[in-house]
Length: 78
Image (cartoon, rainbow, N blue to C red; front, side):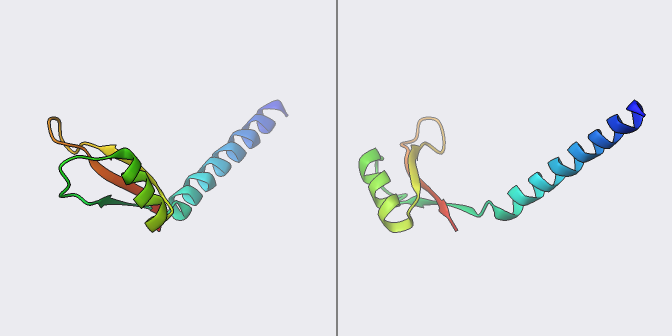
């Protein structure tokens, strides 16, 4: 009886985890865009302000490669 209950419990956990992964993949819907990529530097205040007003998103200054100036990258719901 205990082996059957343990097996059912493990199957239940597996099913729940599969559904949660599938739901995350379908419902994520996050997009990213680089705001003003030709700018010489990224001002975090301007970056976040333009991301919030234009896309209702969250922005960060991120360098694409080491040694290059950072770009304003905005993440928002598609």
